[in-house]
Image 1 (cartoon, rainbow, N blue to C red):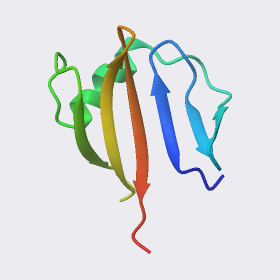
Image 2: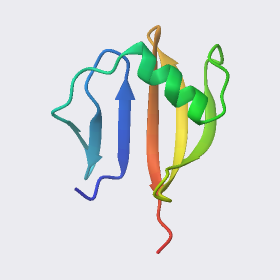
Image 3: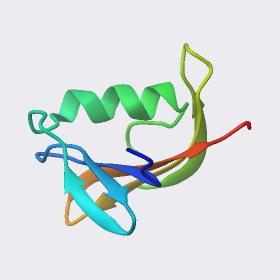
Image 4: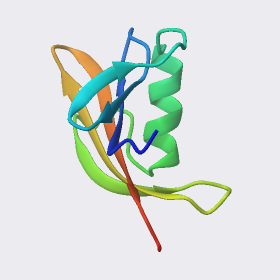
Length: 84
């Protein structure tokens, strides 16, 4: 999709930012457990309110990650770090 960002908000489906426009993906709303796993995968304590970090997937894809709390719910913004 050539998206610049992948956005996660607790209780909502994931979104992509494509050419500056947010587009919801056809996925179920994200549960608290997803965010607990994401925080852990990024090496961030569960009670930490926000963090700037990175994440490398098992396939080698790398992301810049901003973890945050917004309106009392957890959220995350991931931007792919391209190696080409």
